[in-house]
Image 1 (cartoon, helix red, strand yellow):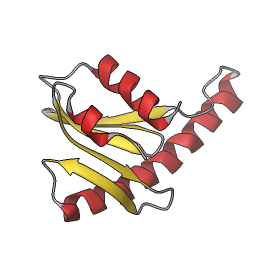
Image 2 (cartoon, rainbow, N blue to C red; image 1 turned 90 degrees about the vertical axis):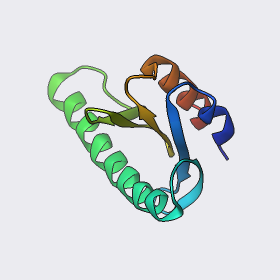
Image 3 (spheres, rainbow, N blue to C red; image 1 turned 90 degrees about the horizontal axis):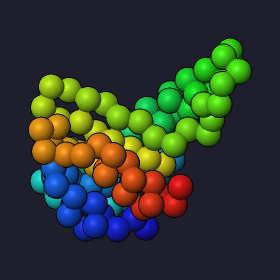
Length: 111
């Protein structure tokens, strides 16, 4: 299980969670309701599947190394979701270092 408390210590991270391959919420912490976290878990699992398919396609058509999928981000004007494996965080774009977030996520996901 990921150390969500560690992820919440990163400047700009306001919620962290872990989800199963089929989109079930495993754990969540931070400024997020259980209902929001459950919805996010489903979204993250679906996006993992889509991103994996895209990486496989990019590798097949370009001959470049895009696989295996490590992670992805969904970014809006103020907030982003960053995911590696089955662990993700919600961040405030103006406060966060995306490099720091993805380094910590890789460590927590064991990648």
